[in-house]
Length: 268
Ligand SMILES: [Zn+2]
Image (cartoon, rainbow, N blue to C red; front, side):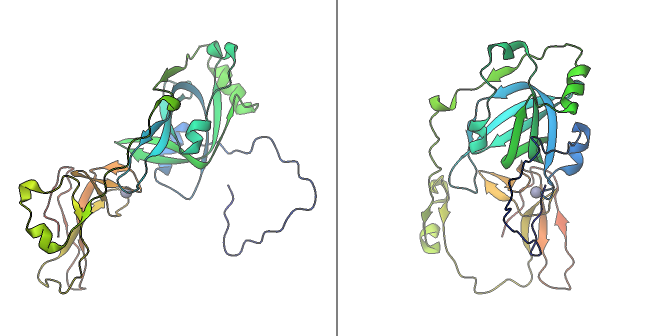
C-alpha cells in the first residue's frame, strides 16, 4: 500500500519498469477482526472460494442511487468461513474463468486492497475500487494452502439471479418540500409516508434543554435515519447507537442515555 502525503514527490519514470506479478502482504483470517472499520490500511487475503453470489442492487438511505454488491464466501481450509463483499463495477468484473475443469478444482483467490467492516455483529471483508484479485495465484502461500486441504474438494455454491436479468431498483421517492405552516396543517395520521423536507432558520435555542443525536456505538459518529431505524454510514450497522448529548456549554457535562437497540428517545 502506498500513502501519499503533502510531502510526496512524484516524477515520471523514464525507463521501462518490470513490476512483480503479485504485490501482496497477507493478513491472516484470524487477525482481520483487529482491523474492523480501520480505513487507513488495506488488507490482502488469501482463501478458497466456497460460494459466489450474483451481484445485487443494494439501496442506501444516504445516497440517491443503489450500489451493486457481490457476496463471496471464502475459507482458509480450517472450517472458518468469511464473507467478502465486492462493490460497484468490481462486483460485475469478478468472475471465475470459464474452465470446464474448474468445476472440481479448488479456486484459491488472492484479494488485495480490502477493508474490514462490521455488520450485524459479524465482520466481513469489503472490496471497493482499490480491490484486485488473482485466481489460483502462483505464490507459495497458495501452494501451502492447497497442501493443507489434503485433496478435499470445495464445490463452489452459486446463488442469485444474473445481473442482466435483474432490473435496477427505482430510486426512493424524493420527499416534498413543505413549509412549517403546511406541515402543521397535515393530520399526523395523513402525513406522507415518504416524509417531507423543510428548510428552517433557527432563531433561538432553548437554554434549559440539551440536544441529542443517535451516535454509533462503535465509531461515535452520528447515524442516519433509515425507515424507523438508524444506520451508521461509516460502519454500515443498523440500530447500534446511543443517544449522545450535544455539549453546548462547558458547564454541562456530556450525558448518555439508553444504549439498547430499540431506544427511541425524543429527538429535538
Ligand atoms: Zn459507526
